[in-house]
Image 1 (cartoon, rainbow, N blue to C red):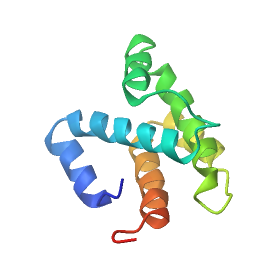
Image 2 (image 1 turned 180 degrees about the vertical axis):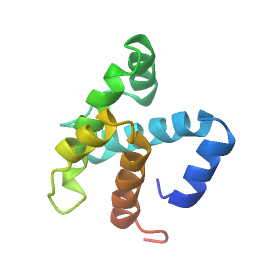
Image 3 (image 1 turned 180 degrees about the horizontal axis):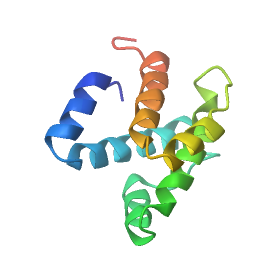
Image 4 (image 1 turned 120 degrees about the vertical axis):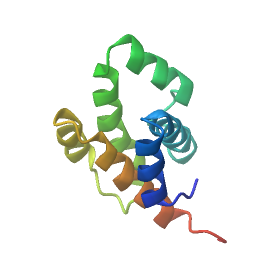
Length: 110
């Protein structure tokens, strides 16, 4: 669950996005754990849907992650922010923001 955001960004760049897909999967699985009422889709299904829809599902995914993670980020609904960032091609920023919420909610050693 807990990941170093800088390392994740660097690995995403070095692996030409392959680690980014894995990171996407990890975030999706965490959303299923944190807020199952809001998010039931598995990581593999989310990746498949994104591929099938040529990335359109990824935009929806970003919006829904804002809803799913309201439970752990102090009740703040970041769904519109995530939607706008993904529409302009900054989904990696969303991954970082979501991972930051996860890291704050589940600190190492807790």
